[in-house]
Amino acid sequence: MRRILAIGGGGFMMEDGPSPIDKCIVSLIGKARPNICYLATPSGDLPAHLDKFHAVYGDLGCDTSHLAFFHQPEARSIPVADFPARLLDQDAIFVGGGNTRSALAVWREWGVDTAVRKAWENGVLIAGMSAGAMCWFEAGLTDSFWGPTYRPLDCLGLLPGGCAVHYSSDPKRRMSLHAALKASAIPASIAIDDFSAVLYEGASIDRVFSWRSGSTAHRVYRQGNSVIETALQTVCIG
Image (cartoon, rainbow, N blue to C red):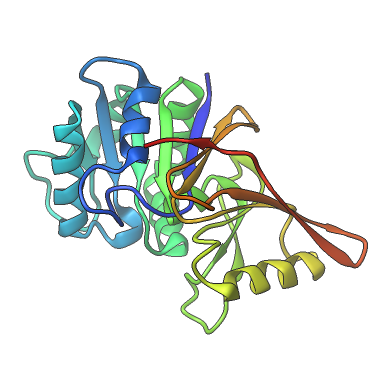
């Protein structure tokens, strides 16, 4: 079963302690003492993010590891020399937030994009927040160019269409997505609020999770000269 959980914002990177979505990921794995590997490439393998991941998911009963390209290997990291095989041994792979464009460049240089695709095809649950959510789609609406606006970015294409994250937290994101759709610069997209996440099975949405009132995901697409935005029904967790 090919599954991707795209988180608009939240989880251990944004909340204090284990979030309902972190607990949900462990539940989706459905295994005692699962193996979960963290890819913090979008944040440049920020040590604070690595430490928090290991603490939170360790407390949730997981055997944790991470894959890092910006720091020397340490006891908790999987070896760079054979990371494709080690990723296949995981029950889940979690990708953190940060700069999507930079992360994709590093992944393509090292072959992480190919390795993660193979893991996904072999049933490893893929999850990610913010940059770690957008990167799986055909395109993401991102600030990774460090410009004044959000721009479309070609991504990995495991999932169809475009993706916008943190959709409820900044009106510029909505304006930028609508403008990009009107200009045919991004395909029909899923826009995910903070404190909500979309679970895909194959290329189709299975469920939308929400753990804060009013948070959801939206289908956003162009119809003629207009942009249509439809909120999706959620399953409340936590």
